[in-house]
Image (cartoon, rainbow, N blue to C red; front, side, top):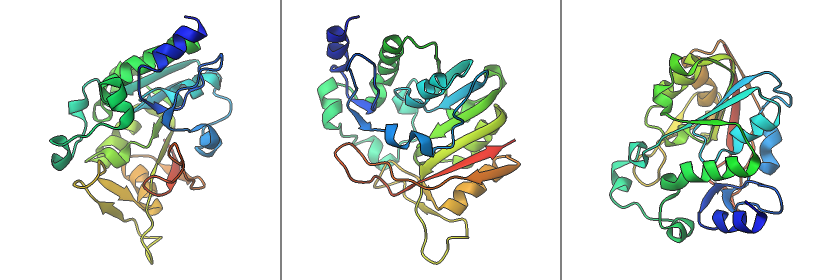
Length: 248
């Protein structure tokens, strides 16, 4: 489709990721990861690598790995928004954002369509597979790089999720997630629990994020430099991001 048609299609949706689709068409995502792409410990050169993006949403990180030369990229996400780990208090009173109201559906209801639109615009070969992080298994094969960004905070059971990442990983897994340091306990693995007021369950400190990777089966863990990911229009969201790289 031409740029005018693409811009019109893009405008039908609210977007989670800010994606540059070329020809001056950029999605107005809730978050713009472009300024922090260098902070997440992804290798600059992924030539020949088989990569997995877990919780892909609009596909920003899947397309980023493809752009870095990956031989194959698989992106997984839930097909049914009702299968998300919604807190009981929020499931019954889900309120749409302005972008979701504009689209007539929630961001989670349209993420598959948005991914396919971006894939077509970018001429991408990324394969999207409907799958929960809890169900990552051998049928997907194994991957040199497994990537999971901003997802553990939304899960009831992060340790089981990290075990899933490890099952399909044959080299490295990169996880970044909102973190919250507990004053006086920076070295002690701790997490703040919610599950009521926000669509978040566990907000770990950096020590807990490292411990999660070891508990999930990774033999060693590197930690990157924490960074802020501002929401569109400025301001932070749920504190800083911690980033870790687990080695098998």
